[in-house]
Amino acid sequence: MCDLCGKIISHIKYHKLSHTGEKQNSCPTCDKSFCRSYNRDVHMRIHTKQKPYICPTCNKSFRLKQHLQHHLVTHDRNE
Image (cartoon, rainbow, N blue to C red; front, side):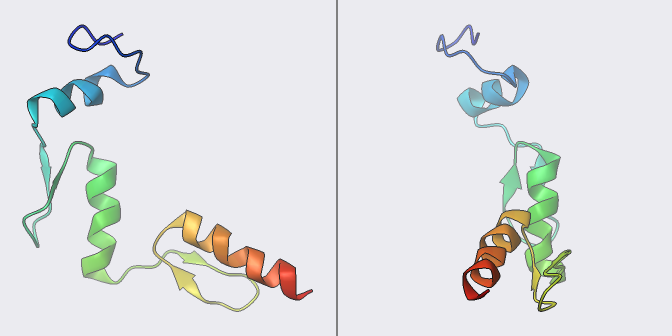
């Protein structure tokens, strides 16, 4: 439980940063900063054009796993 706002949070360390506004993980390419390094790393894919999630049906690639999952539904509808 957060001692600042009373919310029950699973990742209290990151939640407390929302109260301070502190963001320790900055993008070296632009001025965005993030509480979590994972979020910064995913953001960096915008700059690197990296799209690691590839559709096994049509080979279209996606930056985010959830975008691939959403895309896969289009193939299911076409079958």
